[in-house]
Image (cartoon, rainbow, N blue to C red):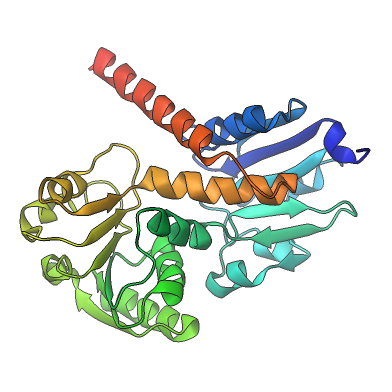
Length: 287
């Protein structure tokens, strides 16, 4: 084989802040498992203002980029192509550089959500609840468009957010009903609950978990488990966590960037769990 994959290839995650990102741990574990010794994966602190110059400064050794906030929408005008999945939510978390130098944007968060749920046996649901209305919530709606046959109720904190979620529902072909955040405990009775809120936002719902809960997908991975996820597990419900999403979307990114049909899910998850465990131990030592 004589293509570029025999030579040094580079990839990285960009965002601001970025020091917390687990992406280097996951991607490097994949490269090691796949025998891609010439591949490197780094992290760079890049904000919206610095993004155009960063992209313009990349050479032909670069295979791809992972993007986190605040770059997922800012990158779109800088791309040559945006694939359908990313365009559906106007959010790009993956940029692949083609051999002829084109920049192609994609979104692995959406299929990552679907894959993480399917791994836990959730292939379809009759209805669902979404807690929150940020950028991750729109990806959750796009994922639910693939697996939910009925209505999705979004629990939000303002009418502006409610309008936004209804618009996303119309765009994505999902029947979305909105309700005020003060009623979020009612949503926990849904067969699938996707919590897309920042750390601490759902802590007050832990005591409201029903006796026989369905499946909770909590997109946070640190600290873990969240109080809601812990209470859910205690009552016998299935829990999918943020690390599951992170790993599944990273698996898809590795495939897009390397051209490999399969990526080592187990090795990447083990590396992520080890890194989070080390962080937790470090906090315990310093507190």
